[in-house]
Length: 471
Image (cartoon, rainbow, N blue to C red; front, side):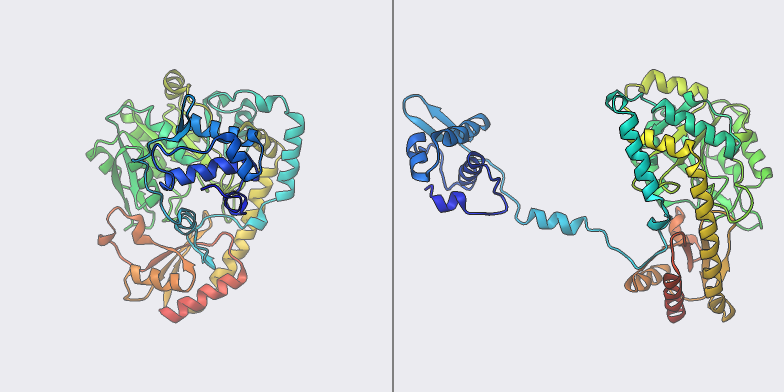
């Protein structure tokens, strides 16, 4: 039954600790029914002698099996196998299934990702700041984090927003969290259960999925695209009885337009016509502009404290740093404190201290300026490469003045699904404009949304050559 080669044979499950290996071996024999119910196990002394190990090793193995219930002891008779008749069958190749199921496909050209190139991030600088954080905050790193985040980071964010976004913000109204997904989950709970939110149409499919998963009731509000200045159908907000509007005035993705001051004032008029109306302003990507100064957020002209401002550092620092924040109006902040302050802050104090230093020392602003300059160069090269395709009538280029994206209207009869499939076969992953609409069947097709941040010259040439071959 128990042989020395079986016990000591090296395999991927060996721990290198004899009593644990013996415990695992006996357990596997019981689970597989090689050892059957009520079968008597060798005495500790006899098993130790046959295996050439100490009695203590066998004693420890038997003790662990006893604790977990795999065996039971009968006084003066010894150890016996317990009943595991209903033990679930083991899956085969679980490790291999995990590897293949969650393996992320890498594409040579990723037009879907709106991330900066990894080499643009000042990794050595960030590492130095992290070392300083470990040195200067040894004791604080073990303290409990306030529910809304460290005061140092909230003050740094408020200072940054005042200097560079024209916003007067109290650090006490800022809540730090690990990504926008977390924020929406918390935000859902501060609104009345019957609240109906409004999402612009088109908008990110991911945003609709987030609202679905967090059980937001919502309606889609059309963007009027028939005018030179696309605007939100505010009349539909009234018709559909919406009390919450999610909007990105500084960058209406995927259209890529900036809301004019006239439309902003109309939104504020709708907002202030009734009580308990709020606007969620997602200002993501707003600081990335091709020329001039970033457009001030809607928050900066709200005098009635009805706007919830949201932003993230996933692009301005690095995607792996899952730190976002939202600014709540005083009334909602009080409700949050009264009902949800028991939630722990989901971002480690280590990352928060490091990010606070990064912002306070001006590194964030310099990084954004550097990326803007690089994106302007990438954009120029991309437009130059696409010009020949536009001149030949194969596509039209719709340019935007914010973010790091543009739209390509392809002159083809192929459905969007087929275009995506062909590009995917060529190791190009992209999204089509039709995917951003609540009902894609009613839309014009053939519009590719191109996120070019992080592209290099070779990738631009390859993209253009592929588009040239398929249109």
